[in-house]
Image (cartoon, rainbow, N blue to C red; front, side, top):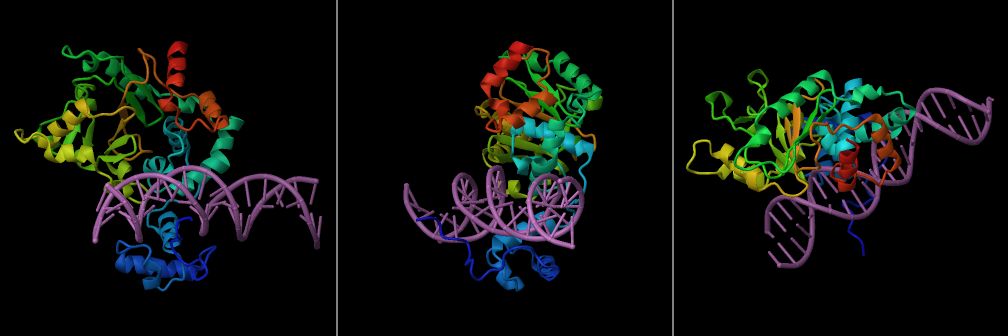
Length: 332
DNA sequence: AACATTAACAACCGCCTGTGC
DNA sequence: AGCACAGGCGGTTGTTAATGT
């Protein structure tokens, strides 16, 4: 016996939404919000629709600040880059594209972007790291991050990026992965000062880290723009570390999180730092488990590799694919 | 003009997960 | 601990408009 349906399909309307239904839902949402219960909403709003259908209509179409229409080249690049890194996790990808919904991106990928890539109408150079990223990469390698005397890193960090996202992969056994700032200027924030030159200090909001699957996301507006805000409900062990941390220290949260980063990162878990809105030239960084001995070579997915990914659709998340890693390491 | 095909995207489906009891 | 439920998510299907034959 299967799961009971969420509503009586004989009694609910299906198919495209009429302008009248849209107006009703909009009006109800403006006045009452979801009230924390989508299932009960249609009845209250006077709609003969399934609650799930209302939720979808709202999130994908009626919600304010939804961006419709053509995707920009920057958005293309972000989608390609993220797809190459994390696969078809559309909600995560959508979180990096303010105003876009996961459904929108998924449709765009399936109908246009995939073809664009295969047809070669996307400039391969667009998927490679830009000059700024190269500079950032060199800073990472030049600074003391990997050279903590107490615990050597098990491998060199790797680095990759698209036009405005930076993927930085650290070894597991680091002792100074991130320098948490104790300055009053950076209340509730952290910096990666040990990685960057002062003028490039990377500050992220400590209030905005979010946990999902094997990803821990820190960041500003971009990471808060998930199509439905669901991540905000998914704070777990990291949040706890942040909130309780080391009681003897004023910078409780920072120390707690630092401890977590030192000790608690599990296999396959990655950290994502975002300091602003994707698509506006901001800095994102990924840290996580070692994925190989890259040395000074960037882990950078080329057009050909993304094409290959598309053609082998079973390969959904090749960032974590050890074989792929080894293959690349050998290649470099 | 009529029909077939393709593209685009809205909507649905069913599984999974988190939460409250 | 176990269950039920609501909501989230990704895959898939349905619908419509545009284009080709």
